[in-house]
Image 1: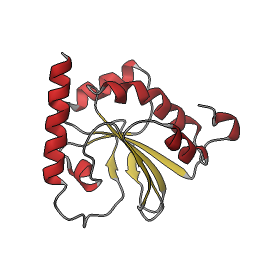
Image 2: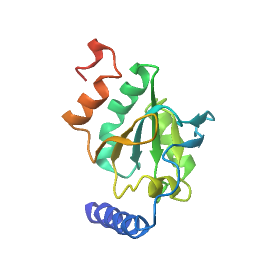
Image 3: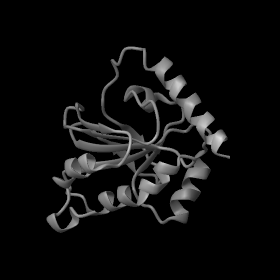
Image 4: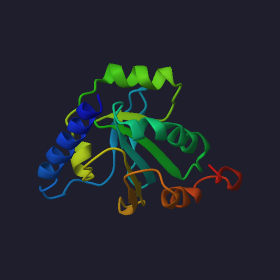
Length: 161
């Protein structure tokens, strides 16, 4: 089973590398309707994006932290979970979110356009963007640097998480 996930991850990474060679002229914000039915437009907002998949072990392990940030963030931070759509379906992702009672706004990247726009080459990928859509921070995994970057948008007593 590990070989299957490794193979899928490598395939995703190779496809993304090929696709990321195209110029990035698209806007660096996210607009759409979440799986929960909420309209999202991050233009002009500080935004935390997490690209993930249900088959990605690290992604799943990090979801409680993402949910914590979503629920406890300062109103100046927009938090969006983006399922990459590779070997996924909307229904599968909805069932996963419901099973774990996750409420974080989640988009499903049907055609991979968001994944390409943000030059994501693997999951998980964490991005913190400023109001103009410029990258403030990028990491592959939840680490102390990411926690520090996000701490400015969490109440002081929440920063320990």
